[in-house]
Image (tube, rainbow, N blue to C red; front, side, top):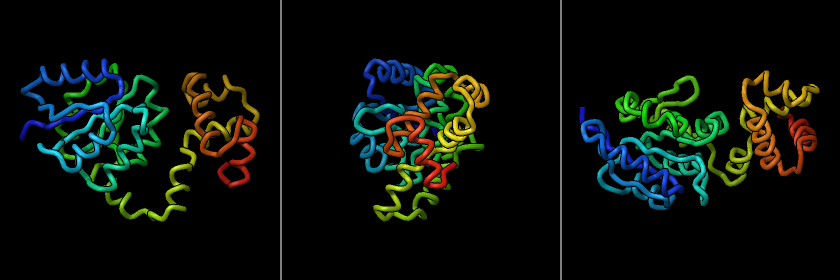
Length: 221
């Protein structure tokens, strides 16, 4: 099998340098095509650049565009490269949105260096490293291509609550406290607050109570 070709996008220049230096030190395991902080350069490099990239490592917080949105932009056009999300935060915060966007998995940044290499071969073939949540790259491309692309439909999809966001609101709607919700979902309190903030933003409301009310109105709970 050919040595996998990787690329990296991260808006944190220090983190980008750390990851790229490590990848360059693994010449028998992988080849680094390019690394960038620019979303536009990443999209162009994946779709039109040479050499062809097998695996793209994508940070979740990119500034101009979210990691899931960058992934979706690439995946709607092509089943290549495989996309692996990475984050300094709890991967659960991004897992659902990234899966819908067509990625093949997500890892926390502390696990990338010790844990990436065993997954390079399946990723380079377009495989998913977490098949219980993420489709392989070719299946993800087919699913996105088959989805309605009208502006109204796109707005609905982009603003739809993730399963975890709906679960948080549903548990609060049952009268549970934040500690109880965190216990049921097995995540930290701060993660619960993040889910609520994201759900409120998608629903266009200001707080948790309004989010629950609007989610009920739209039949999401």
